[in-house]
Image (cartoon, rainbow, N blue to C red; front, top):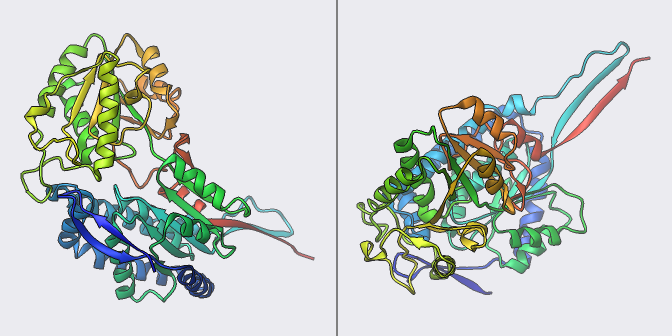
Length: 461
């Protein structure tokens, strides 16, 4: 049996080692899940909610332990890791709250002599493949509504954050959830494809790279099943001339560098109206210099290492290419002594004099770098914002809500914010366009993704 090692970005040491599950393990997990799901879908939703609420409470009660584990596994500062568990609880409990209403039958207008309605049935066994960067938040978006809707879930989590899957399993087991309704397995990429291609898997939800999304599609090409794909972004912000500059700077700096920029909806490019450009850039640089890069276990650290040296090397290459093409870096890397080549530690980087010929402005960076461009008007800003293969989120910074609403109609993303960024409201649908993928999670529409409709059409005689 093969195994994997999770390398902590804290010091590049081996944090833990686990065995991969085998093909036989996959078959056994599917056998148990298929059997469990048939019984689970007949369990009253009120009872399902009891199990899920216990699961949430159990997991959240271990928030401090889990926060430390997260810092070791993926490098987020210990001072910030607890944030993810707060978000986990908010999303999970919101989806719990709206479950019954979201799953109730739909009744069209009455028609004499007929009984007509549309039911929502569970898909069956759902495979969830989740990433490391927000390991609880990305996975819970699907796991909770899927289970509440009567499905069984098999989770394949990133091997960078394998303890997340264990924490889920322990909490569900402690809640008393029937065996097989939730399970997790550690899989190689090829074995994950085997799982997805199995006829007993009735739905797939993947969060990760575009390349990974294509591999998921390939794995299920011989089946017609729902497939949700959330594949990242190159999220832009537009600072209009009427924006509150101090407020915009504070929020956009955090949106750019929180979690070392390793967020699919983090800010990666900023377009600023020429009349406020100089002021914005000056204040953005001053705010960036306040960050403390270092060991994420140190409470004074506000920006930790990237997840891997390979990831920081990629971002360094993007920065190098931009500089060679005429961009300027406005933050001296020497202000962040922990930032060193050949390590996951990379200083927050702000680039100006950038354009869309540079990969840092059109290819997902997923790191602590942001490019800032000057624009002349709304039309130019929207054109540049849409000049991307991705379409997850975009933000407009302005005091004019009516103009923001009008501009939002022309922005090619799943979410448009005004005066905020890098946040998921569980009451709103999380979705994207273009290479960001397809499907919806969260909100009442998220329940539509984990169910299928059945029309009941009875004629009375």
